[in-house]
Length: 310
Image 1 (cartoon, helix red, strand yellow):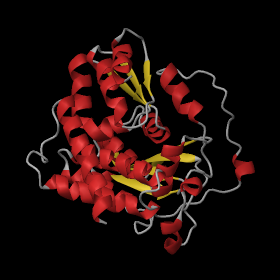
Image 2: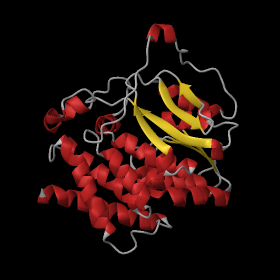
Image 3: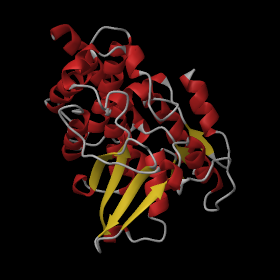
C-alpha cells in the first residue's frame, strides 16, 4: 500500500523514478528528497500540489530533481548552459488530444472510450483523458512554474498536433531553442537516467523530410478551460495547486464512472477552487505534507458536491 511505497522510496538508491499517477506520488517523492537522493520526476502532481514545499525540501537536503515529463525534460535540455534571466518565455506544446478537431457542441456527448484514444502518445487511460481535456497541459504549466521559477507571463501553450517539438525556449534576443523528438517517453526517461551524460537510446532519430511539415495553433480556451484555471491557480498561489489537482482527480473519477459529462470536469474543478478560496489559510502555501493532504481532501469533497448541486 501507500506506506510501503513511501518506505521503499526512503531506502538508499542512486536514482529514483517517481511515475505514480496523481497526488499519491507526493509522499514517496518527499521521502526521496528527505534523504538527499536524486528524484527523476514523471509525476507532475508532486509539484502541482506542493511545489514550494518540494523545492524547499530539495534545497534543504541537497537533493536533485530531474524532470521526466517530456515537455519539462525538453525545457531542461534547452536551458543547459543558458541564463534563465535571458528567457523571454517558454512554450509548452500540446497535441490537442482526442477531441482537438471536434465541434464544441459535440464535446458534452464524448464518451470515456473516445476520450481514452490519443492520436500520438501511448499512455494510460487517465493521462490520455487529461490530454483530451487539456488538464494534463494545465498541470504541466503549473509544474513548469514551480520547477523553473517562471511567472505565468513567461509561460505559453501552443497546440502542435504532430508532437515533434516538445517545448521551446525563447530568449530576449528573439532567438528560440526548441527540443524536437519522436513522441516516445524513452527519450526523456533515458536522458534523466544518464544525466549529465547522453547515452545511446533505442529511440529513432527524426526524419524531418519524411514528416514533411509541422503545424501550430493557439489553444482555444472555450474548448479547453483547464488552461485558464491553471493560470488563475498560479496567480492565486497558496493552496490553489493542491486544490486544482485534487479536484481534477475527483472530476476525472466521476467522468470515468459515468457520473458527469466530459464538459463537466472543468466546472467541478472551478467550483472547488471557488469554495477553497473562501477558506482560512488558502492564501498560504502548505508547509507540510499533512496540510497538502488536508486541502486535497477538501477539494475532492467540493468537486463531488458540485456533481450533486449541478
